[in-house]
Length: 183
Ligand SMILES: Cc1cc2nc3c(=O)[nH]c(=O)nc-3n(C[C@H](O)[C@H](O)[C@H](O)COP(=O)(O)O)c2cc1C
Image (cartoon, rainbow, N blue to C red; front, side, top):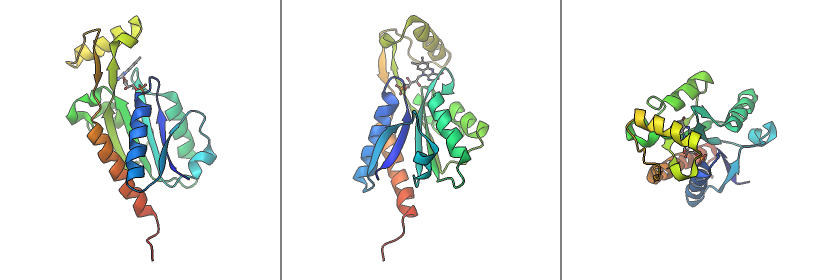
């Protein structure tokens, strides 16, 4: 069974990140496929040797289906190791990509009392022309407060794709370490 790369996405960018992680893992010899986390159940999670969850932020919160997946994860009798990635715009600053420095990721881990094997924040994508007026104004406000782009025609992909590839390679190493060595 390919290793699922669970993702929670609204506008598709987090799905693209999950696809890239799956491609990286597969290239490293571990077959993987992106899976939307909506509707996940305990059976799906319990069967997985290493849980990878990549979730977008909206209005300060990770998408609710990602929270639901963690509700299930928390109740597993035997929890597989967890790799967690939070997709948000704060992570566009390279110094805000770790569990210590990214506020969304830090609060998520703390609030849920998680002990992830790996955790990173990945910068998302900004597409002002696609947002409705309310969303655009809200995001322009966030960007003004943090010294970012406010031009209403701006479309910016902030994702560090090399960083995503490096994340995939790290996961590959961890998953490989779980497998019994060939004799
Ligand atoms: C309505 C809306 C609200 C958002 N709220 C936040 C936020 O509070 N903090 C943040 O860092 N990014 C925020 N973002 C940025 C998203 O996390 C980013 O665009 C991400 O790439 C979206 O992923 P998706 O395409 O998989 O849904 C928001 C984006 C939208 C559209």
